[in-house]
Length: 372
Ligand code: NAD
Ligand code: DAU
Image 1 (cartoon, rainbow, N blue to C red):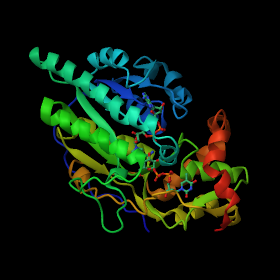
Image 2 (cartoon, rainbow, N blue to C red):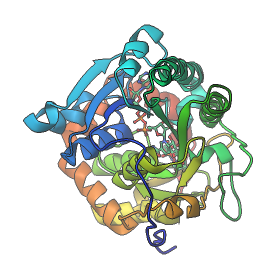
Image 3 (tube, helix red, strand yellow):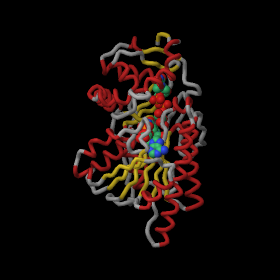
Image 4 (cartoon, rainbow, N blue to C red):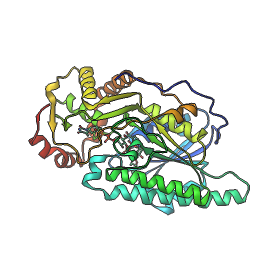
């Protein structure tokens, strides 16, 4: 399907936080969080960011190396290693922030099928700890006549479950179908309850499938690009006709920042991508960019409960004034080229526990694989 960029930007109104606000960015060493930190600090408008990140297998300080290497950016940046589920770490950091942007999560659906516990700890308990800190600090600030702490929860289109036809709007029922998306939906419900019960100033974004540089190689596009570079098999689940709407990472980070600054309290905003494609279409495009043959692709037994399609209606975000900038063809080309140019980064991400994970996830599947 052709690229479909959302319509013309509307006037977003008055920003809810100042350009030079102090932001606490949780999960800021991951894929999308680090893009957000690089982009917001890179605007050089005075914003200050503290990153709180547990540095799980998916967190990587190398993702923030460009910030640490630039003196002007580094002067407005601080890194704290820690868990969002730890109130002793979270409380003081929230107390010095104007806003919290929560990216922290276990983010891979396949791992949630193998080992769901960490998904619940971070996605439910961790979100609750953040909300409690925001509630307490906001109460103290309101008592002193100051504005509350703003909170943004980064969520996902997967909370709607599989959408076989049409597009999800923000008022549709939540129907998550994997432990990952159930944890994300639970986090959102907690946020909503704190808005209603405690008057917390919170907003939620539901983003589409995101791709770009620094994407962990467990996910479809980086896994297939890096395996193809090494002429390894590409394990395509089922018939490969599942559909996703692909969103370039800097567009996703920009949309999150836009909602943080202009979103109405208590509201949720879909963040659609720019291209609805089957997995076969995506794999064809990345192989073409790499100059590698389709014969690398192997059809393997499907992901249990695999959501066939996601699709988001983006009119609410467009009415708030946000518009994606990156067509899929451009975003994919620069992503593939980034992986080709950054082998040390992804080879490091494919080390440590990687081989054990890969064997557990793909060993039997590849043994049972057929021509794709
Ligand atoms: P990622 O796995 O690359 O990064 C997650 C980051 O969170 C890592 O740096 C990790 O160390 C950190 N983290 C995990 N548990 C933590 C904890 N308890 N305390 C502190 N830090 C912790 O994930 P991503 O792809 O960048 O996704 C970021 C957010 O966006 C997630 O909330 C995810 O659900 C959401 N999202 C992702 C996509 C996508 O396609 N990648 C799309 C929509 C929404
Ligand atoms: O839609 C937003 C979600 O997108 C985010 O909330 C998640 O954090 C993010 O991981 C992503 O979830 P998906 O499950 O859609 O992404 P993944 O890259 O794992 O898979 C994309 C598609 O490719 C999906 O249909 C499964 C398929 N796939 C994936 C892998 C890893 C394969 O066919 N083979 C694979 O080896």
